[in-house]
Amino acid sequence: MQGGAVSAGRRGVLGVVGSAAGGVEALRTGLVEPAMDRGWQVAVTLTPTAGQWLRMSGEVERLEKLTGLPVRDEPRLPGEARPHPPVDCYVVAPASANMVAKLATGLMDNQALTQVGEAIGTLGLPVVVFPRVNAAHARHPSWQRHIDTLRAGGVHVVQGPDVWPLYEPREAPAGRTLPWSTVLDTVDEATR
Image (cartoon, rainbow, N blue to C red; front, side, top):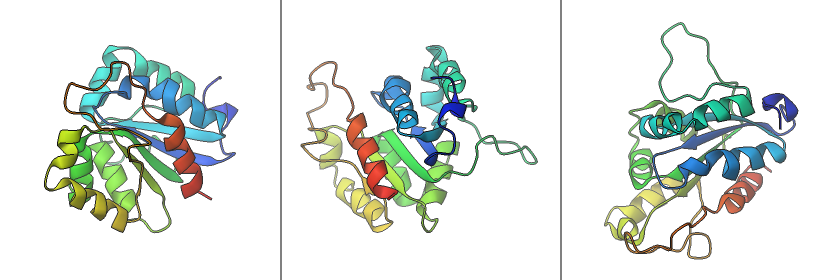
């Protein structure tokens, strides 16, 4: 693959948003490359911590070379041109428990949350979220309300024991791969 020009415009622009959760290190190979193979132009935005992690490993540079677009993890300055084209669908994967809670309550305190929070309120703009959480997160008394709130806002939440079995903290099998194909299949369904 040679950057965004290979698939630009065939399906539209997929805004990929990654947060600081396990699996974000495989964002390029697990989600971005397969999305481009499906015909999407991909624009990547990361939470500040995920941006820091992926810069340290060299993944930000690889993502930028692959997509032909800058990876965002900070807001642009007033008067600066928008670095990404308009997005046709957002996919948040992995979404940490913190990110899910903030999206559900309307908190938008970084670039990634601002983009997705605005998208949730935009008519006709699909949003897909994969919560990368454990059993303790899901038992929190607010968790189900967060999921219900997102769904009420039209968000396609990718979850369930067949998609991502929940384990107790630090008890999940090592090396679990995120359900990237299921996430992309949900994007396909959401954009039909």
